[in-house]
Image (cartoon, rainbow, N blue to C red; front, top):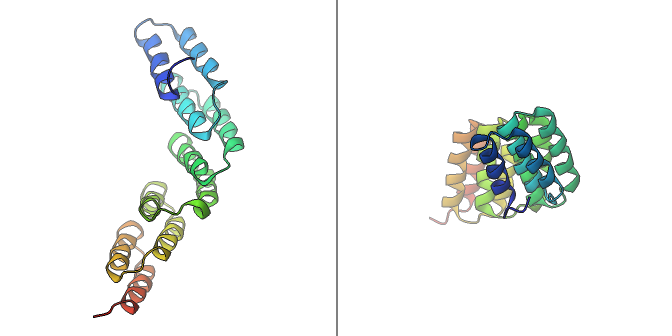
Length: 175
């Protein structure tokens, strides 16, 4: 319970099983750690622990529901979305959390990474395009937009949308 963070607490619980063969002690450690969760990232890390250590899908779902109650900021909704997808494979809840996070994500590189993740990992090209569109708003130079169009094709295969990006890139060419 008093480990530095949730990942260390989960590692401690795993050690209790691997070294001491104490499943009850490991479960108690994770149960005690739940009272320390305050952010979706903490709940998701604890849920990952329950999944890895006990393969307890019911507890994972319960913890992710609690995480949703605490998700207020864009960053917290991103943690929630990644937890829903990575731990539960719940595309609908993941997409919903990603959409809630989108208005607050303003870093161009992060937007591009999230777009690629949405397209390739989650398999939702429309969500990826929303992240790409916001990233494009932060671009002014034609070469950046040309790279964006290439990323769109690579991640989503959407040639029509990539052509739109190329067209906007050509409008900003000076030579």
